[in-house]
Length: 179
Image 1 (cartoon, rainbow, N blue to C red):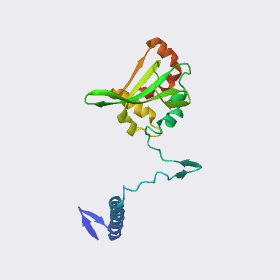
Image 2 (tube, one colour; image 1 turned 90 degrees about the vertical axis):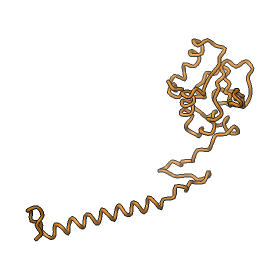
Image 3 (cartoon, rainbow, N blue to C red; image 1 turned 60 degrees about the horizontal axis):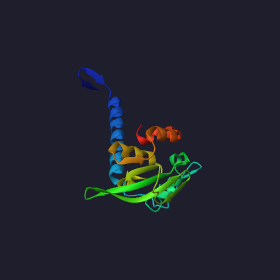
């Protein structure tokens, strides 16, 4: 028998605790080995698909000027826009301290095309730096971030009241614009 602090411990209890400590050490050692051998550079190819249950997950495609029209035309917010208003979406960047406009797109529910409207009722401006952050599914997060950073703006020939009335159907999406 072993005596610790005037308590008597039987040898089989010490063996039992040593066995538990050994198991815990082995689990921690395996965890450390797995952690340091895990390769974070493994990424799926752009064409790969993952099947989860009955659904097929396709990784998002980066949005570029070439595919933004098709991306926007399937967007829920664009599809909820009023049909009787001309809306233009313009990208800009800053060069030498001046705002330089890039590509512009005409927005209609379910239809987006590259183009320019001279007399658009609403023109929405977005800094082109957000294009690289824009992937399938994060339209709202990009607009919200751009709005809080001051990189999302608009001009309209309509009064604030007329504009609000025209776009009342978009109130369900107000969180996308930071409201």
